[in-house]
Length: 231
Length: 169
Image (tube, rainbow over all chains, first blue to last red; front, top):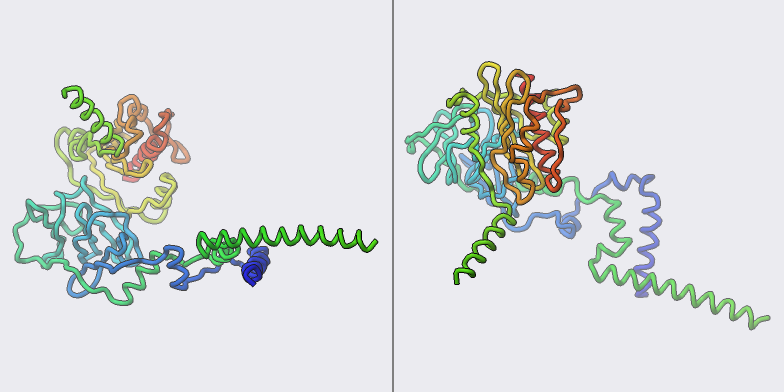
């Protein structure tokens, strides 16, 4: 029985894999959360989201930085996410990622284009200009985030603050991280090889295969021995 | 004791270089200033969409990512501060173009532990006077540097990209 179960699984999955193209297995994906977790395609811990006026615009979650469906390559601490007239500024301590209203990245402003760093807070004023707070000064952007000027109008600023994301936001980020899910042919291949069940699974499958080979070999020996005796 | 101190300094210096310490050769603002007689002209923006974006993606061999590019221009000159990843880190490069040909390429900030040879004049002067040929290729032949292939490729792509962008303004 111990050999029968893995052997049956290996045989059935082997037959299925033989028809990967016909069945379109590589085009189908598995989105089951438990399976995705086994492939490391789930986000751990709690997200730290930023927004303004109660709305969420960006979050840092399990080391990833999210804005809508976008994952931003920036490992610096997230300090704010500010909706502007023509887009959203996702602000870390070292960069400003400026997204358009359609969610497309317009430009990333970094050390070469920012007025100063590190940035400790981000917000906007009544003109919807982006405001960046650095240790030495406060800077206001122009309408297109092409230039910054020093400002001292601290009282006029609505600062981006930590917010609680909605279940919809969480779902969007999880999907952005895991993509379409695990390709079905990959899942079946891993079950077929035992890899899906971890290191011990691989060894169990190896033992089963060696066991089958031994059984086949000894069976052949017995067959010819019996035939010789019958003669 | 003195001997030990010297060894310690050498070891620390080697460790710093092995960890890919960022080398800032020139601030981008200084590069722009030097191109325009000490003054930085107003920032201009080239918006990338449609065919322009597609061609930029083709030159870079990946999605360029951004929907606009800053540049500075005056008369026949334009300056572009562009970045491309060598092996794992972006290389910030300044490119000065005049009348459709590269006047100079300078590595402004280099962040990787290997390949910094691309910052040397023996490499960057290969781009002088280069223009864009059919197929968005460089008119100049740029020799590779052993051990810095990825950095060489990155800088070459940026040179082509800057020439293409310059042709649009």
